[in-house]
Length: 252
Ligand SMILES: Nc1nc2c(c(=O)[nH]1)N[C@H]1C(S)=C(S)[C@@H](COP(=O)(O)O)O[C@H]1N2
Ligand SMILES: [Mo]
Image 1 (cartoon, rainbow, N blue to C red):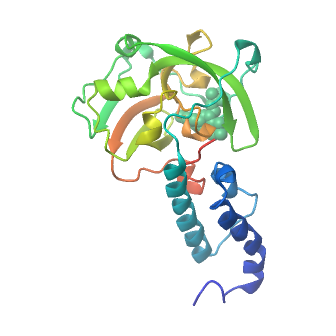
Image 2 (image 1 turned 180 degrees about the vertical axis):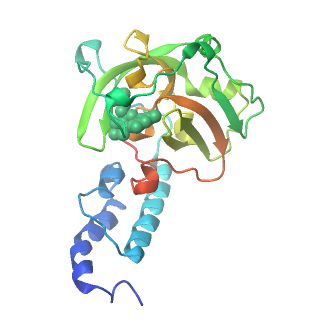
């Protein structure tokens, strides 16, 4: 039975949302709100078929966004005077539950389609050329804030480990069981940083000590904190929120 003939009252509720999703597929500016389209506040509910339709629409939306992504277009940068103080904390748990990682025996694991899987100490990550930028972080929960992050261009790190740059995805596993992944074009974007610092000091635990990926071209949940492992793959890796319905590409 088609979803168009089943549960008419429920479909009537969903039709405007589906129409909005479809419209967004044709509107470049609105596409960047792909994550929001999956989070319009509707409880998509129990109907598996509708969930499947939305999943397919969202994966299609990922492809359209990937095709429209301009690898050279920079996210806006701001003066230090624009930094939001205090910068908000967010995670799927409260701030007092943030894991505190011991940096002295920390080793970043590297796996998948890379030539060199040697784990990285913090000292070795710091020895990479460092840069910093002031950019806006936009969270799907309805807030945004400007912050300053410092670290190595992620592209440099991927070059160092001999990553297969033709692979589709880079995935991240975090110390708090969070996980996420990004497309290779975004991984190689000049503003994507493997961040060790917030402001002018090392990341505090709440902002992701010892290592966070700062991606100013993507929504906040695509910026994993407390990174334990980085892997390169062609198998769609999903993510903590992505697997619960947030649009995967989620450009900002
Ligand atoms: N490891 C980890 N990374 C994470 C999250 C998380 O819960 N765990 N939450 C994400 C979300 S939804 C947001 S908005 C930002 C918040 O980062 P901040 O605490 O530096 O503001 O972290 C992202 N990265
Ligand atoms: Mo977020």
